[in-house]
Image 1 (cartoon, rainbow, N blue to C red):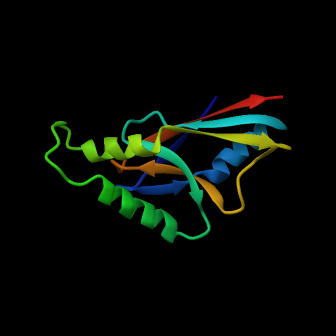
Image 2 (cartoon, one colour):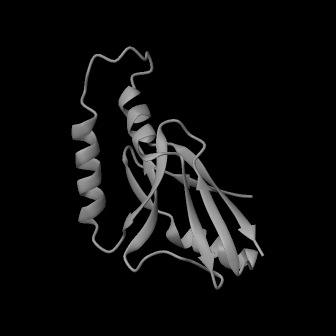
Length: 129
């Protein structure tokens, strides 16, 4: 398993596709599975379009609308971040075919920060031939 560290903004989506592709290439796996896991309760990982930057802006706008500012009881004051993280999830699994991630033409992998700025990490696990 490989851990990759990154510094995040207050809130936003960071394209980590190239780091994951590099890990797959270095592993030399021709056919298998790549799992990306975020070990944080106020961050997430997702796969979505990486060609148009407005898509991630729209996603963040929609998540903010879905998770309103309420009188949450969690004392740290970051309940909205916990909820957004749970909505998107802590991991994604991607097939590896012919030594490459089997992403669609417009797909990218995003680390999603909801409670930054912070020093974060994500883990990559590759299994296969």
